[in-house]
Amino acid sequence: MWDSIGGRAKACGEYIARTGCTVRACAEHFGMSKSTVHKDTERLERCDPALYEKVRAVLGVNLRERHIRGGDATRRMYALRREKKGK
Image 1 (cartoon, rainbow, N blue to C red):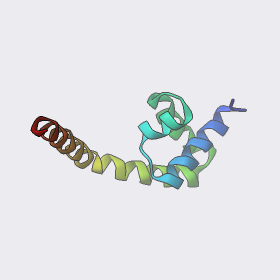
Image 2: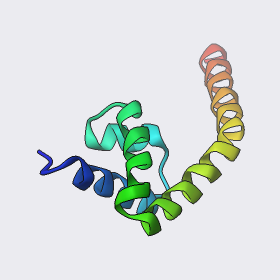
Image 3: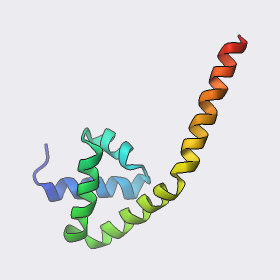
């Protein structure tokens, strides 16, 4: 599927930079593990430093916001449970 590891790393980096997605979403999109995506972002530092900086910025935002996303997911889960119980 991939011509090289560097090509795969660039494809993942471009996808993350373009969409602003999480590592988990990128892994699901490309059909690989989260660990592979993390390693690919590290490889970008050598392959494409400019893209690496963009990806690190997106992943930094995701890291700072993950507790908010987790809280929202929990709130939605309990709201669904209450809704089902009320029916």
